[in-house]
Image 1 (spheres, one colour):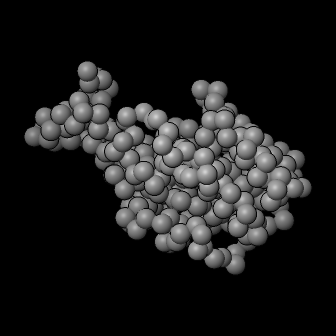
Image 2 (cartoon, helix red, strand yellow):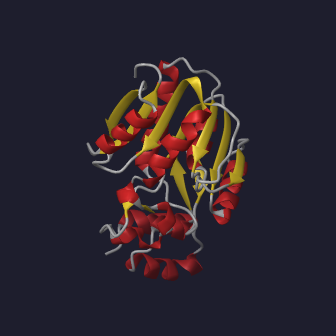
Length: 242
């Protein structure tokens, strides 16, 4: 059965001649966000399609917490790197809410085109570029490295609703830890003396990522936080006590 809220969204965003087709898609489990073509994220209108992961409220909380930690650490006008930017929602939300400079990359060319479009619509200046995380080279030093990387272990059973979203933005090898290993091993050389690393994680991955942090940033402060549903969802790492 189609939710009345979704019906109202379709009627709000789509012309009447497209309603029947939209309702048929909904009945098959196709995401309402892809049907109407956008989502509100941290007060920003973000265009989405099947090339990008649908932004979720858990990731809004990542942005909110990252901003609060930057303030706590007294990091002003930060130089920021986002890894795996997808639709660009995280970088755009940060740029809209704090004074900062942002570089953001993704391996998906179509996703980057969408991110650039979203930045333009939201009237923010962000340097988007295409790169694989393993070949990424950067001499810049960053105050904040932030990412919501793929973290679902391969072959995991997941909600059928995500079957239309790009698999490369959801699943990761090494039991879901692959991108955290690469980020902490390769990019810790790109952080400033006073830094913050903010990561969205899978539930129950916190202690494993803490082990990786101890390996690559042994003198750092590590903070694991939960989302609104009381699931482990965020990791924050800094040289200062968090």
